[in-house]
Length: 434
Ligand SMILES: [Zn+2]
Image 1 (tube, protein in one colour):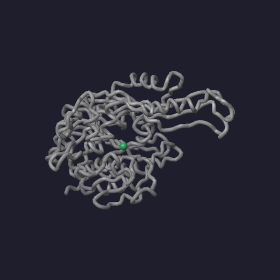
Image 2 (image 1 turned 90 degrees about the horizontal axis):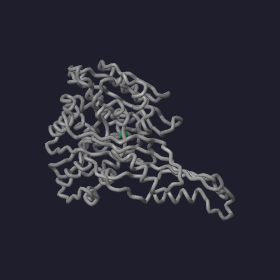
Image 3 (image 1 turned 30 degrees about the vertical axis):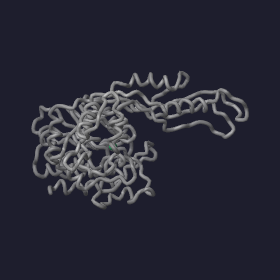
Image 4 (image 1 turned 120 degrees about the horizontal axis):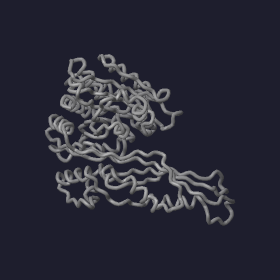
């Protein structure tokens, strides 16, 4: 076993033990400072010069440049976020910030999202520095705060306030891609992320006539809001198959022997098992109601009611989507953006993609890399503002029976030790050719 594959487990456990819970509210966030200092120390120990930048007290990100052999080439940004979503210990088998190793897994909040990849990047960088390995081009290693709440105190802050730290970056790898989906003993698809849906969190509000709860009121803001929210929650937006999703569906239906109608791919997707929820969300725009708010007393009809809708849009669909949404909710509601991040999509080709595929095949003879679209969002949305071409590639080989998608933000989040070590080996090979 290489030194890096050995060290990655300890690095991952240490990072999980540093609570970096991001509640989305500055007052209750644990902050990333502790994890940022840990990462900076591990990088400084091998002679790199990490820079810590804080967007607000405790909200720290780390950036370090690992100089490559050819300074004339654009740099590769290798990024992972340090924050995690909250975990309720009473629901877990092991304490969520214990980093315990049990049954061949490292357990804890952040084990797959995404302290695993942070640890892999640290392990490879430390190993290379110790052995005197030089990357072919500059690597910008970036560990961010606040990805789980829209990146304002992390990636977006770095892009806005410290773009010089990211100077020259042309391409990037980060979450969520490079993980395996087992088809059979000798065939595993590795999903490389080349597209992300947009994030549009909307606030809908209605106004009505306030009054006494005992009287007739045909202009009740709560009733009007609930009507619109219920319509929207049940609505299915039309199927739109983008180039990434089309390529994915063609590959997967071929290997699984599933009949695919490219214009109506739902039947094929429903046969994919646990990842159907993930892939199913990439063939249409979605709008899920998540919050409701109205009223202050049981017998008072309020004059205003509001709802939050978590909308996710496909590449090229942002404008169309708003028109479709307006049609469903009607003309009288106010619609306001709380979060508006554009979708992104790149092509599945070129030297970097070839290097990813080659590294996967070298470590797993049954590997078949395929492009796919993530229904969620990542820090990539910030990097593209600097013109960086982004991929989700944080390689992991997973056991066939593991419901990987359910581990993200899930109870008993854990990562297989062997998967982590596989990831380190793939990352090492990839970065040598990147
Ligand atoms: Zn994540």
